[in-house]
Length: 326
Image (cartoon, rainbow, N blue to C red):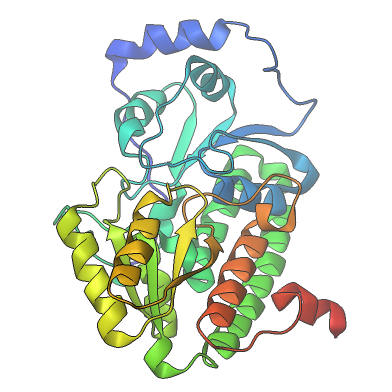
């Protein structure tokens, strides 16, 4: 099945509410001078839209560094921004679970698309908790994210036909960078000893990473951070760490490190030392204005951090450093 972005039908019962909010004026919310004003839910989509759209697009991201999209609920200022935007891009695949009904309503008031659903279904992994849904964390594999790049370019082109050729050219250049980053990831992660290719994290956000690079991925919590990590699950993972001699686990920037530290303490009680291999970016990117605050920087950081912590080799400065050196 080919990938496509998905739009939702509008339920007219709430049209008046959205229209009223669109007309409201809130501090700090205004329209750009020319071009497309758009809103994206996640930082990954926002960054992609900025790269593809260039100076023809003004992008506002709802979810910044450290924000968990699984539990996020739109604020009044978010609603105003979205109803006044020319284009709203969200991920879909049940990532923004608390906002699904809102986007169904919003679709009649402005242009709305779930660009994460552009990834072909035969490339998607199943959801641990819902038989009829998929794991939404497709950004963990840059090659899958190229489908999202194309979807963003298509949506921008429909919103601004005069810029369609620019968007297509920018998307092609960005896909080329994705391919290069994916090659770097494969090369660096292949240096990790096979027995050490076990990634233990706070929640199951890295299955697409694992599928792409042959890593076994174990999350304390399920795919959604809304699922609670039980005592039994922590005990199971402690046994895995001890029995298999795994020496590093990873915390995530958008998830509490409490459960990960419980693993470390549990392993220590069984006289097995486990350290934190580093902080990974899972559901949100790094701070705005930093390299890790871009999609490419986020993936580069994760790959380089994982490789080094698990006994592999990575060049100084990671993929970016490799590019500079060449």
